[in-house]
Length: 359
Picture 1: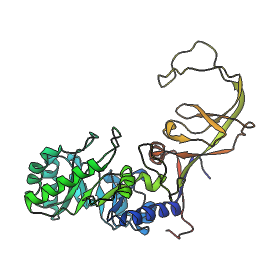
Picture 2: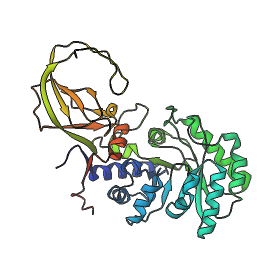
Picture 3: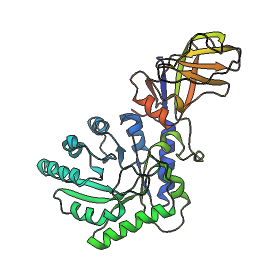
């Protein structure tokens, strides 16, 4: 077995996805699982489909292309506004895309017309997190231009919260999005099929909401893979938080001083941390570094402390007897660590899919 290694339990991902899909269905909200954290891996895509997903989403056209070429046939949504340079690929591989720029949609229209297909779009509305989205007071004029374009189908509107500034989804934000949907429909005499109210951070709002709402879709990634939501909210009851873990191997284990000696400057990353003299310590080094994973997103076992890291080394200390060379340490991950480690070519990916007979 090769290390460092990501262990991906497809059975737990299946459970999490099915649980979320079923619970939100009770609220008449569909779930579009987001595959970007696993780079559109076909095994994960099929697991999500088996769990009940009717559409998959990703932020990278390359990941969606990977799913298409592997035989994944459910509709696919591109959740990052397309670049000019990729409109032909978007039309070819993506059934629907989220958009905020009319010039981009015009180019999608031309590409779709040339390919003799129609392309569906969702228009993103800015609700305060200041990432993507048109300002609410511009929505009517923007939609007027969109619906005039050939080979473009307006499927709905959506919004994104929490990702940039942590602005939380709440009744006020979701009512604003719902009101904009109502205004668009009444102005143009059309029906918006999808009102997408955000990402994993919107789950607890959706589950707790009791009043009527136009929100009928969420784009979910983190909650499926990690069993939790952003905004420092507690884990979602009924979900696995350990569906994906990271294991690394110890390459050195020594008893060393805790205080470095010699003339000291900044380290290779321009850092100069304050260091306390704690006497001699049991120190181990793992073959894992910043080039592999976002270190701040790792959570070590209770008896181990992460002390520091370099490009290729992770230094830990143990509260128990010294760790031996060759021993393996398993970490849990937050979203930043999961995203970076899944994107690293230096970390091996192992899929546990035996129980469900996934191929």
